[in-house]
Image 1: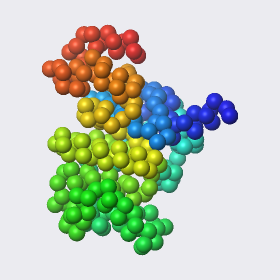
Image 2: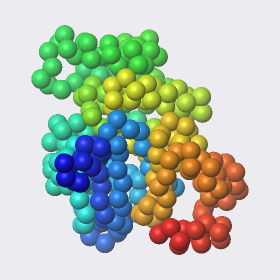
Image 3: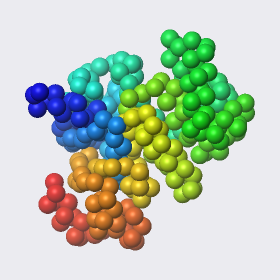
Image 4: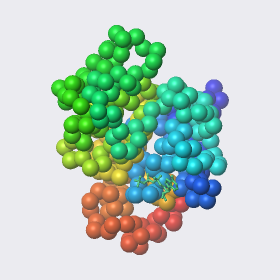
Length: 272
Ligand code: ATP
């Protein structure tokens, strides 16, 4: 087996030196490389504007509507190059991207939301089976299955948005800040469900979060992105123990941004 095919077997997703530019001038992502192991859960952590969402969009193919373009590097999914593939063909390959902001059809019920997300090729019986499978993971949503989604709480809408993604039976689920605006207990509940789905179905997950504390409890590895560059990559345990991460992301420090801390700057220079 060649080195390349070995890496394909091990990693479902591999980004190599990806650069993304918006409007031909704004460089949002500056040559990042990251891997998601098959069946693994990996976090991409970073502050506002660091380039997390842009990275996910480069994988799902959602850059074009925002005048964004991959200008360098390559992306492999499940052993196939996908950098120039159309977004719908990426969904067909098994990539599902739950974008930030828990988008659901508010005027439809959860039943209808899940049905609308099912692939066209499924029969009615298969759609019902898939829907029951989702409700098994999200019993809260099952209880509200006939109410309008617009009346669900923020956490329930997030669960429904994830449920809609799961209706496509993806191989890789990319979640953009699922914890945003949710109470800590609810975040723990949602992350616990994601972990269960990962364990029971072998679903690979790439989790984008500013809430490093919660994310590092469920992932095996994490990448820290800052100003479009990966500045740290390690196991979740090592990241939790890292003093810089503790200072900025785990509630240990007062600083609102990294630039206020000199030693972080020094470390960052050393790492990059
Ligand atoms: P957040 O947590 O705030 O969503 P992020 O880490 O996901 O932040 P991105 O949304 O990827 O960051 O943004 C990275 C950089 O690219 C930022 O400087 C942002 O202003 C810029 N950017 C993002 N989208 C666009 C766009 N459509 N057009 C121009 N610049 C953009």
